[in-house]
Image (tube, protein in one colour):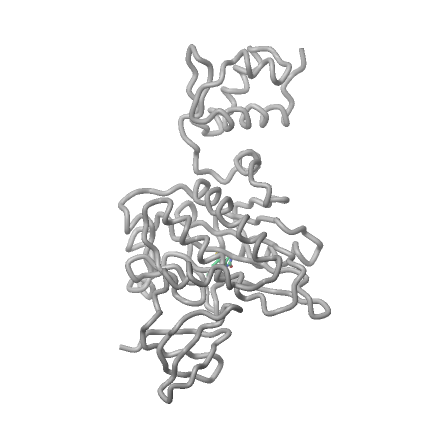
Length: 328
Ligand code: BTN
């Protein structure tokens, strides 16, 4: 009978994940992998030593929970049922997953490349800001996509925001979206999206979609400058949230929407869903971009993802990018 080589070991993990949360018998695992039951038992001990909570009993083996570890082979197994993910890059530490994803995209990384890390040393936010995260407490990842579209494609960032909102709603939260792509819980920011693009001959070469979610941060773990404006799922719910489960759900929600968006790159089919969750709609806001600014009432979203503002003289203006704050 064959020995379990490294790939085979991960096959055991895959079988446990497929059966999760039920048991799978040692006999079935041995049969499927063409190895002895003793070899299976030995490998289960190794999985336990790696931190996987595997129960052993008369019915066989079962994973007790999905551990929240960014272990590359484990994530590979966990995301094996997500056809969107074509290439997975898992690192302990990076300067920024967006910077790394851009580098990989320049080297030809395919659509569906996912870059994730435990800790970002200099995570980047919109408008040149930094993005704060803590190992184990924040989810930070980037996706490379290559829609064959001409610009503008910024509405993809709104779609990612909406997919994050849907993901949170499946977990019982009531998020709001602040144009263009901030996700708020109880009026405070819980997640953000950074979309970076590269064009070639007036068509998209690649886009990098970076997502940062505050999952398990405590109030005093945020830098004092952010405490008033930022929150986490833990702060709102009093419960810890798993990064890997959140990621898996997000990808399952996002992928089919992305494939529809990619056909034309317009936001029309999602405007109603977005506006229903809009934090700004109907409010008086001040929008700024570059050195310019404008006050008006936020009326809605255009089909290219721009924000519609009704300004004092009744004129309708649209804003393709910028920063918006509520005028009290
Ligand atoms: C914002 O709201 O300003 C956007 C925040 C985006 C942060 C994420 S974290 C993962 C990815 N890598 C980065 O450096 N930034 C994005």
